[in-house]
Length: 163
Image (cartoon, rainbow, N blue to C red; front, side, top):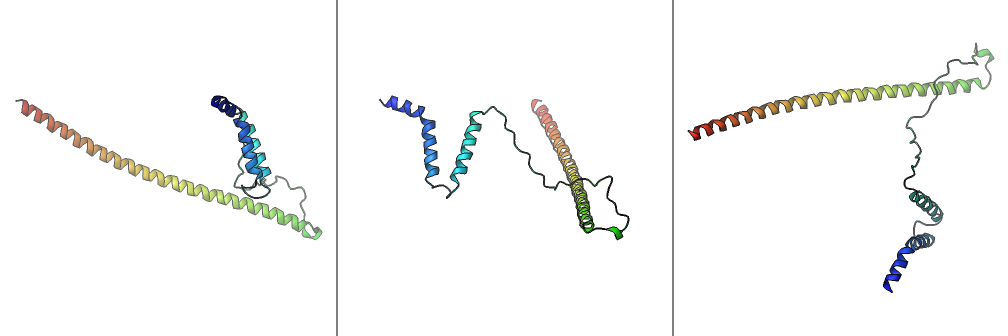
C-alpha cells in the first residue's frame, strides 16, 4: 500500500508543486501586494521555456553606453543667406544643430582619449612583459648553468669512486 501511494505521489508531483507555488503566491507571504500576478506570469514563461530546452532563445541586444547620433548631413537644404530673413524657428534649429555637432565632437574626443589610454596601457604592458621575459631568461640561464655544473661534478665523483 505504501508503494501505491508513493508512485501516485510521484505521478502527481508536478501538479502538487504547482498547487504549492500557487498557494504560496496567493497567500501574500512573498513580497507584498500586487506582485503575485507578475510572479505567476514569469513562472509560466519559465515553465514554457523549460518544456522546450533544445529550442534556442533569442536574447535582446544589450544597449550601448554611447548615445546613438546620426552623422552630419552632407547637404543642408534650408540654408539662409543672412539673418535678415530669419524666422522664429531658425534659432531653435541652429541651436539643435549646434548641440548635435558639439555632442559628436565630444564623443570623438572621448574616443581619442580612450584610444590613447588603451595604447599607453598596451605599451606599458608590453614593456613589463619584456622585462619579465628578460629576467626569466636570465634566471633560466643561471639555473641551467648551475645544473650543468652539478651534473658535471657528480659525474666526476662517480668516475673517481669507480677507480
